[in-house]
Image (cartoon, rainbow, N blue to C red; front, top):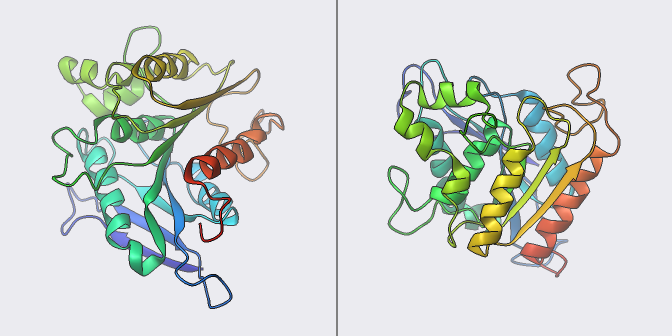
Length: 275
């Protein structure tokens, strides 16, 4: 494995330097010549106030084990930064991955973004708004080919919203808060999505995923969704490696990793030689 950390800006913003951690699988001469692997960009959660390490490297290693180059984004958060800095960081990360595709043996048409909780909102905002200001690019090189959303923050509507995430992202800008209610931003240009949530989530209600899935259906965008009956918010891998406390180990929820990998393998045709 090749491990490297990249700065995503020339200079820090408000004292913070966003970074991209790269976990590149070393393919030697025993593999088919010209092998190009797919990739996953991981956006940890943390309410747009920090980046949870439980939802960072442990996730990247799972996808590496499945044959994916993996990347972890350490993005700008409150109180020093708010919208659109995190979105710019994620957009720039996807562009950087594509720019280095040939060097890393990476298929530039098979890049997925994934996120947890507020990181799910970040991933979903790129999947829906990649072609809008202030993150759009002339060549669309920031568009993810897929999105995996894990107990995502989606809606800013009362009774459904995770208020802390939107307070950190939007501060007192009510118009921006409405704009960042992502079930209203889905279009036919939105990337195919995989979503999972627990029915018992008290921090980010399951309605967030349901509203987003309904919007995807209306727009004709492919989606797979799993709702597990039990488990609190923030489960990550739902095992002892990532459990934050009592209730953090839920064997049934651990199924989400193989389910998401199977979905992504099918979407990216990873079952074929050379992928």
